[in-house]
Length: 153
Image 1: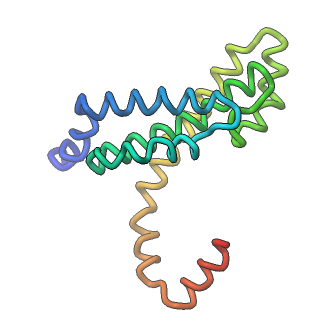
Image 2 (image 1 turned 180 degrees about the vertical axis):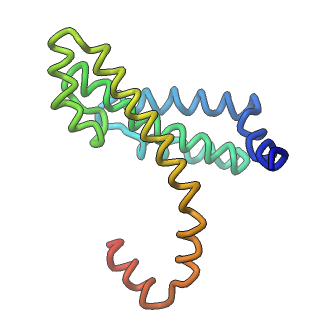
């Protein structure tokens, strides 16, 4: 069990992936702070560069940009009452009044904790339920694919 776990975790701790993770997080944070640009735009901008990367590095880069970009929108929502991303629109309602009272650090800390906890929780849920969802997806037939296409539209 331990050998299997170290086999899965070892690539993530490589220096190349940590650098890619850092650069992707920095790029995503900058895009999230700029109103009008966001994680989706960041992914589209960086997509041509992922062609030269191996699959794991490309996925890490795109995921880091998306997660940091989504969090970055909360910074401008709290400090200047302008959400950087649509996901941070509700943050304007609570974060900006706290910043006006001189508690911007507290509001940014709560946004950071909420983003980190939500991200880690969603990863755990995905790891636990992905095999179950994959088994359900294997049972899909033509009616289910049709319904999926209709609801996707």
